[in-house]
Image (cartoon, rainbow, N blue to C red; front, side, top):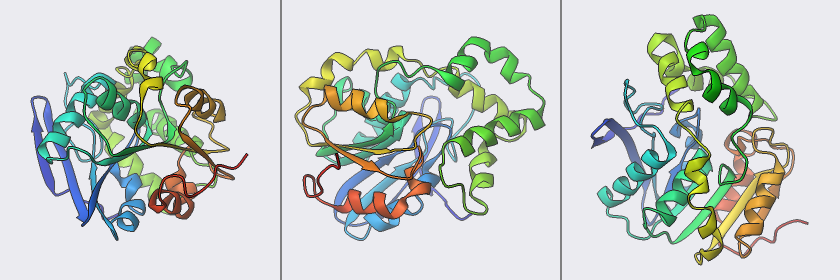
Length: 277
């Protein structure tokens, strides 16, 4: 699957790879785990018809560098994101974030003190009691997971990826998402990043959510099994001026389950599409 990030941004712990598409007002797309910017392969070109779209792979993910000793905490990802915004000379972009990308975007806004024009969060880690399921198991038993035979590791990752989609992957997509996590180096990288993602990094900004004044849009798949709808409700209660939109028949990966509906919402102006009850 042809998705290449041709630009590089050097950090002290490795290279972050990125690219920009289109022209116009800037919008930055922030992916989560265990995914990469490949998730934006349909969304980015749609937005690039009228915007300059920036995509990148977090350090330790996708086409960016993977190595032992990297700090892959949410706090570190937020610091890197803030530096990327500075590198791109974007002082006031729109930001769209998914999964742990939501926590990264929120930390960058609230704690790293970067400014956004507006913020869209969908099926996103944001706060509350989200450290559960696979996250919790890996945090408690990282050494065991790192010793899994390669076939067992690949089966676990594939199952986790399938669990995130309600309608299933199109041919070749699952294999593309699995590719960075295969082999000894990929397996080590997978558990390295998961074992550093902690709820304490979102608790640090929760008290600031109600102070946000920029336009905020929340979008959620009704069938999300990774972050069920109660997490959308939790976030909406804490950012009361935020729009909330539900997408029916879609799971955690709206980019895969409902790319057309997601693109329509992302290209619409804030406040133009009422939230269904």
